[in-house]
Amino acid sequence: MVENGGDGTPDKEHLQRLSELQRRRRLSASVRRQRLVAQAEIERLSSSLAIPEYVREDSIRIYRDAWEKDLIHGRSIEKILAASMYMACRKHNVPRTLDEIENVTRVGRKDIIKTCKLLANRLGMKLPPASPLEYVSRFCAKLNLKKHVEERAREIINEALKRDITSGRGPTGIAASAIYIAAILCGERKTQKDVAEATGVTEVTLRARYKEIARKLGIKIE
Image (cartoon, rainbow, N blue to C red; front, side, top):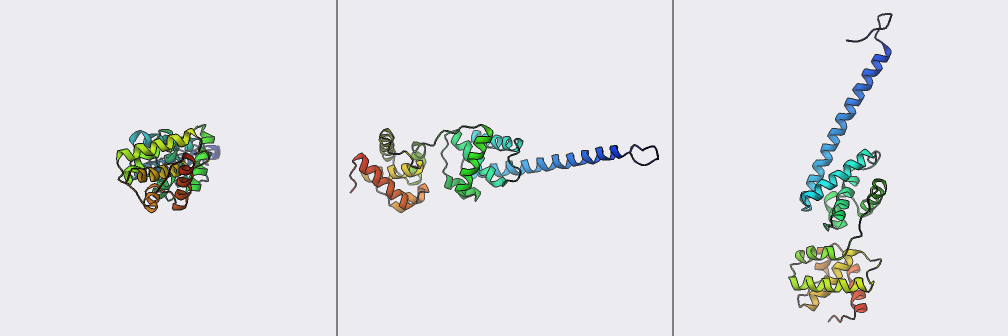
């Protein structure tokens, strides 16, 4: 029933309240739709990246926290989703490279990093720095390398870490280089192209890193 004013016309304040209620309902419905779309996209990304369920759930939580902090407004939802996924992987030590995230989200590496920094700062999250050791198992599996190659690569990385050779270097580049060296030392040589493609590291970076590590650790490569 519509309330009337003294002259029989609808009460202005009542109409304003109805209008505001309708606006809120439309907004609420829109929010629900967008959250469902975001959740479906995270499900897709998790499947493509073979992400464990607990990481998927945490990426959804990070996205919702960003929404509640009004960090979505005026920003690309795709970038927020990509950053949420990468941050959840980092938080739980589930190694997925920026290249892998980029490939399934079509969001560039620089945008992912920039958005991660924004979310971490605004949500009060501290992400542990990625370690090259986190990537060794997956990279070796992609290259079909045996366990002893993986173990040798880990030894090389640990020695490089001990001597602070890795400072300022990307973790995937260090991991790729250690694997390349280990494969040669173990008689399971892989081409630089194969290693680069499997790890998402450029051949230029791979050459620079493996030569630096080999030189500083005194490793001779034939």
